[in-house]
Length: 367
Image 1 (cartoon, one colour):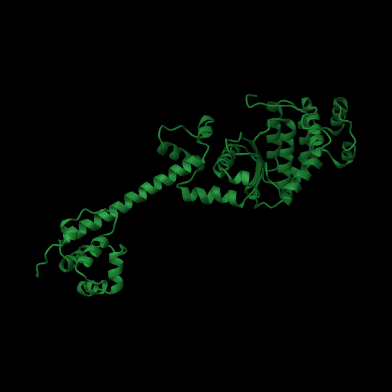
Image 2 (image 1 turned 90 degrees about the horizontal axis):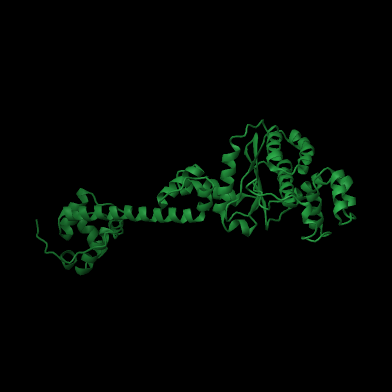
């Protein structure tokens, strides 16, 4: 065997192991004024294979290490060790990149609220919180989460609202908690006719002031027609008031956040979401909140308004005196709460936003 004197690239070698062995090969070729073509011929391979070796696309095995040693010097073990350290560095860097990605994902989620409300178990470290959030969303990795939840948000009917797009992680967490809480509700198969017919009776619940009385009845009645009603407080970053989606062809989720804690907003949102279930596609996902505007949203708004105040009463609403007794009397005849009437009058611009608000029923999460 011909003895090859060591080059400066070998004697002063102190590499960045994240660089491929090909970087060392390039240094040697440069010192010896050898072209890539010369190197490929001496190595006994095609130019394409030599380029793959130099750029780290071709791994160095024992046989190739021996050939490189014969052409460039240093031992075969040196080139094998160089290859192993390079591949280890790649794996380490990939792990660090993955951890960074996971940490960034954690920052997208309302972890503080999720922990305080018992949606997830609190963790002492980021890795524990990441594991808890993965279990909460029932996903194995971020890619699955983005496909399942981020994908849901991107296709949802609220996609035109920048206020929802700002913090999709918060909206996804709220939707997921709604799914979890609704899972315990025993629902009959979806029946659009029965659900539509039940809305007239559900209007009467608007006159019940205590949530502990009207919510169980609302949930029970809706479950009879295949609708699981869940009420979940929205976390920081989620501005949604309500949402609807079909979890399966026979089961719908109607999710409410009680965001404004007043009876007029709560009931208008409920009937708005009911409108989506009856009027629009089963494949669509709808969220209701600030900044949402579309034809389907307007249709749901109109449905809610007509359901709460039927057509035979609406003309009178245009001329109703903005007085406490008149509003109460009218609400009794319509069969809904006075708060709903004043809320509609405010929406129509007939009453100021701060006028007769004492007719509304206000709630708190402690109730």
